[in-house]
Image (cartoon, rainbow, N blue to C red; front, side, top):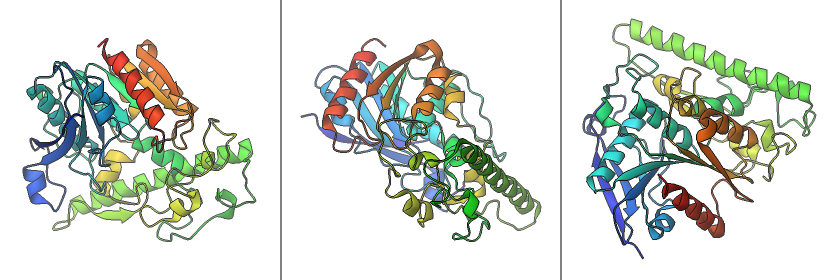
Length: 373
């Protein structure tokens, strides 16, 4: 059995402080866990999410047993995305890549799992051709090409297309008043039985348009508020706010939409309960974090960034996933063009919970793909 080791990695500060944790922003330090294979140090990878704790990721041990060192790496925002800037997270990922290089590994690849898929694509796009100089709100970001060693390939595993797309597809358009978590227009309420499921195509089209409209209203307000703060002497440069009800995708209830093998409901529990929960996707954020992660101006869209890359791609589709769908797969495949290989994990749920045989199948497929890098 390989020994599980702790990685403690210092990250070069890359932009102005945005957190009350001065130590973490002035001298960022991130943590990960990894297991080294018994023989050789040729191939290694990083599996990372913007905010989830991946130090116990299910791929670490299976890949070590197949000769690949897998570093489950946490960003500085592990456990909370309230102030998260995607431009910061790619700096953290770059520090992890340099850490593995320092251990002597020759070929490095990325595993983008769930929300880590868009992160991996964003990182690789910038590693191949650095374009980011500021966060969307205009804060300078000091990144040098040497901070972002490029990966030899990308694995996308139950990968979302990006946080900005999730907000557009999951936000509840029936909210009438942004300050009232209970306000609802019954004609746009996905949880109103009068509307479905099965939802009529005309209703779905209206619902999707209303989702975009609500996201756009919040985004326009965020820009106005940010400009007002920065034009006001003595005002703080940023502020937190709430986004109520962000789990209202019709696909969670109507299995005829974007059909796969999923069960109805959210991957986090009953969909309506998650929608109204006090803490859910994007619920608590700041103006700058919203613009970096959830808004249309985010620089971290997954397929758009993947299209800018040249590395080979392995796409692992979880056919029973309740949060990534055939349309998600198609967006990734189109962005990757002829560089992508598709492997379908039949019956796989989003987290591969209770599915050890599918974890082993995925690890075996990754190892075979990585051997050709």
